[in-house]
Image (cartoon, rainbow over all chains, first blue to last red; front, side, top):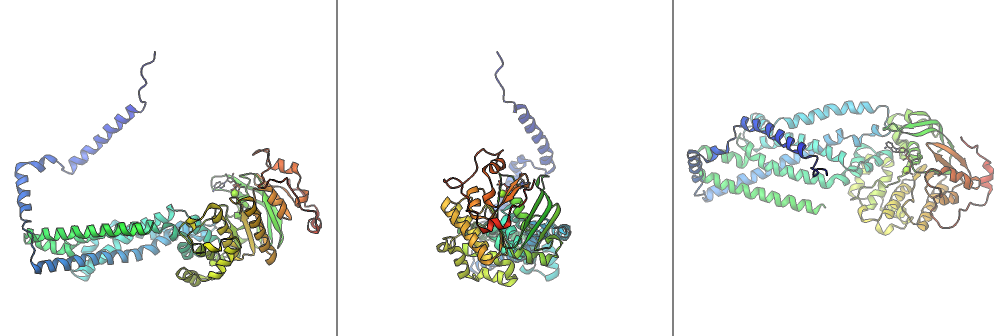
Length: 273
Length: 277
Ligand SMILES: Nc1ncnc2c1ncn2[C@@H]1O[C@H](COP(=O)(O)OP(=O)(O)OP(=O)(O)O)[C@@H](O)[C@H]1O
Ligand SMILES: [Mg+2]
């Protein structure tokens, strides 16, 4: 008697898809993205010519030594920058975390005092991460001169902003009762952190920090282009002198570096779970 | 510590009135069992006594002072003298038992000793002794997530025993233990309270344990005291009334019929506390 039952959400789904495409299209237009351009005859030739300069790769002993030194420099830059960022981010995240707030137990009448104090710290975290690391790098290159020191500072500040926010979110997302129990037996904020929060959050903290370290390795190459040392700075020099062979060697070195970082972070994560 | 609650109300964030006009007077060294159906406000009462929740109105005095009028430092000191065994032990899964137990003294230890103990446990013998009282000494260096639910609950008890508080609060401390172990654990709490002359307030869902061990039993219902008297004067009718909506059966953990201790000197001396409401 009745017609075959249709899925009642069908219309809604079709409408949603159409609306999504309608919204995406102007964005693609705005970004001047046209895949056909990629395959136009002239463009393909230009790209091919650029890529052909990559071979043969530069494999001179002198140059390989330079690449090795730059690679180590990049690694050191990223590691030092991330370590500094962690040192900056942890206390900031602890300070803004509500699950470590003594006055929230109860809550006490003075609970608004804590809220008032945490607001500017949150703003500071936002400020540190909202300015891109490349801008920080440009700033510090002027302050401390060309070289990896500027990169370390740029990563430390920008990543501290990101790590601080994520740490704080990890603290709040986990089980907050252990920390609260410490506060309820008269322990302080720092005790609550080490006895209540850290054992809960440690695997996630390490996992995210290692991921950020990987990002820092990649970011340090981009920052190298504005003079903040490492592989990036050498790559920029070679590109400017149209030495495609050198660029390709350094790309291979960079690829190896990222692979190494990936393997290391997998290892660390496994050890912690 | 002696406790005084008068016309105490507690409204929880959702707007629910968990305690409605609580009236309770506890003198130093008393041992009290709190019983009542699920949602009666047992946990809320214990958290108020442990200064973890601030009453919305009414009078609360611990050792004669309102804890919420104290300056921050004094309140922390007071908290370090109150130990609460939680209904679900709040222990991080990756923490070792030794650390979890030692954490009980953080309030008393102070900043530096608390942190140093993370590098090397400050009082291994003390932690082992506390765990030994609950038959867990051999698991001292095990991780909390390697324990069963009942074992974890006993670690929670050991931590508060190690804390040596002047006010011992226990929220269903034996809910996931078998009858024999439950009896033994409540007995251990008793010995501790008695030996050191500290006040013990424990909520229990097993009425037989409450009647057997405690000289005074408080029945809680809808956030207020339904009865408050020595176990010999708690009648089956009162218990049926208390648990009326939940189930017609009085919850016990053992298999024997309800037993009350002989009316000894302790029970008669107090006489008949007035029936509240
Ligand atoms: N965090 C909370 N937010 C809002 N309401 C709550 C919260 N915790 C408990 N309640 C409510 O407060 C009332 C009393 O809860 P409480 O935990 O004190 O009961 P209880 O007697 O301990 O019960 P049980 O035997 O199940 O543990 C309940 O009705 C409950 O729904
Ligand atoms: Mg409860």
